[in-house]
Image 1 (cartoon, rainbow, N blue to C red):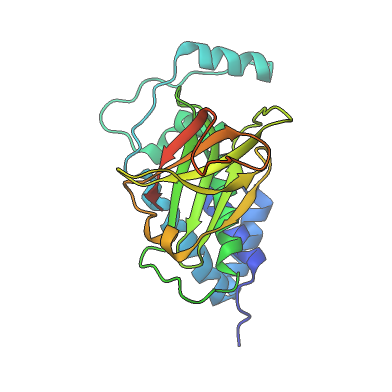
Image 2: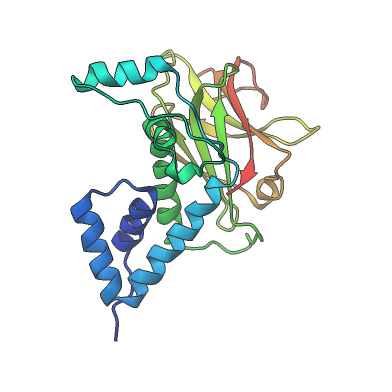
Length: 243
């Protein structure tokens, strides 16, 4: 009888699908998958899950300064590839992966690890949703992402993860808000701005987690807003969408 895939196998399979394992780790996982049907199924599931991320990605033609910077940092010659003719697959676009890898892959892997963790947590009663996961990139007005939020509607849990270190004055707090379309902001809780945080959601709040809602972060007095509504500046916000 084959051994079921473990949490470690889940993480390794996800890392494999993201392309962040080195050659030896990839070979080891491939060997394990060939010997264990459960691991093979886990690996295929993660590959299929990430394949949908490519559907709306267009090829990126980098400016010359990007290649010059790579050359300086590597200390050697870098040959810029010739422009492609015709339609090119995003998978074959080397520059796409180089540019995306510094930022988006890190964020995706953080969300990935969170989702794997949540999949193994106990399920509280009374919270059932057809679409289990929703995500939001909480960004400043200039588009710079500060946090990502992953909502597990089945378990009534929201995980917020910092994308970059956010500087908040010591006598101020960061508070999370849900803003349904056409409705007043709903406080979700105060969190530490530079650390991952978990927020428990009521069933009523879970029912409002729809694609037309927004998650926002405001700066408040210690302990949060005294009025139940944002009193300080809203420093970042982002629309909620399905995974």
